[in-house]
Amino acid sequence: PPGLSVEGRTYRPDEWMNTPPSILSAVSRRLHLQPNHPISITRQLIESRFPDYKYHNDLFPIVTTHQNFDSLDFPPDHPGRSRTDTYYINQSTVLRTHTSAHQADTFRANQSSGYLISADVYRRDAIDRSHYPVFHQMEGAKTWDRSNFSPYPSLTEAIWADVAAIPAHGVAVEDPNPTIHPERNPLQTEFHSAGEVEAIATHLKRSLEDVVVAIFSAARAAAATSGAVVSPDSITEEPLKVRWVEAYFPFTSPSWELEVFWQGDWLEVLGCGVVKQSILNNAGVPNRLGWAFGLGLERIAMLLFNIPDIRLFWSRDERFLGQFAAPASFEKGKDPGLARFVPYSKYPACPKDVAFWLPASSTPPARNSSPTAPSAAGGLLPASSSTAVHENDIMELVREAAGDSVEDVRLIDSFTHPKTGRKSLCYRINYRSLERTLTNEEANTLHERVRELLVGRLGVQLR
Ligand code: PHE
Image 1: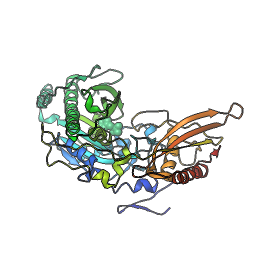
Image 2: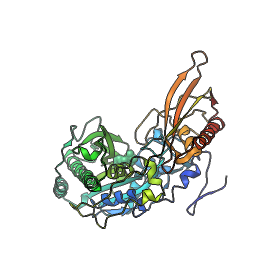
Image 3: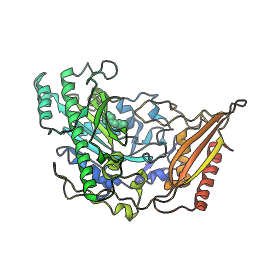
Image 4: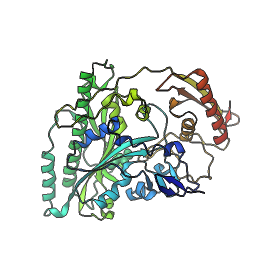
């Protein structure tokens, strides 16, 4: 196969290649670096809470499977490695699925104690108002050098002193679980003492609570000054509620997630934990220990600016882009004076259903999964060994046919024929442009293209 060139770098695609041109074309957008883009403003606001950290904002998105998975202790059969979830260029080259892909290299290259990495990341996933196959994450890490301190407990005392330097916030935080749980959330007993991990965990949680509180006070101030009608389910109407829950990641232990109460539900905004010592050891800094986190910038930006649909971030429409301006400074304790998003008129939706029989050999589609959370999704699927249809294949095909004119895709019916055992699915595709009214004729044309691709690519039989 011919070489594939992306911004001057050349790759050799093989039978693992599953990255469509539409995804590759997002590489050049770098929304997190467009000065007045809401993703970039969100990044700058968070960076301002970590003034002494080193920022890495231009790391290239195509990485090795070693960087994305192996260096982080992902087991060989982890579902995140599956071609249904991850964009491959070839067997050992992927579009990074998370900023953690750069953890090991950054620990190796930097002797400084804290860093932030902001970048575009890529995942095959469902289509709805909060999922898009390209999004942005910020990774943060902070480590302490053991060799700077005399034996335990001095290191622990130093970390507690750093904790004391983080200003207190007045927000009530639920944190019902113990820092360490022997089975569910274990200490790395070979390397860390319980006292060290208690101090690291407190430093981590306080630092991230500080970020969330800063985001929400900026969001509230924006709502108060915008004069816009604040929707009744808006985050700004209720007191901020935050909680910590136990989590699992292959590359941290113990691990947690931070959730924020939003529109009647707990919304996960970030994952974090105590860095696996093996990663630091392999990166040539065995004397360092500390924490790492990863957060989704779109989710935070949607809360911050009250942006209702993730597709808007990709808009080149001045009615969207013209609404945002980065503040001159992000001073602690000062309102950055952000403007809240004012929706321009919403165009009518045009829902259309498509029903089809799956090919006889096909298994039912698995629900989507994240690279870090084990799920029901299949494991490694070499290109030709299976004809199974995964839901993410259907989603991507819809994107290919209709691009950003689709608001969401939902499975509304599934049924297995009692005699033949064949499975039938019905999906409702909601066509709606963010920029103009789609005529029924246009929606029909898009829908016809979806139907053709379903037959041509996935071998389904339309009903
Ligand atoms: N990379 C994880 C994700 O994408 C988040 C994370 C980063 C968790 C760093 C722990 C430490 O979900």
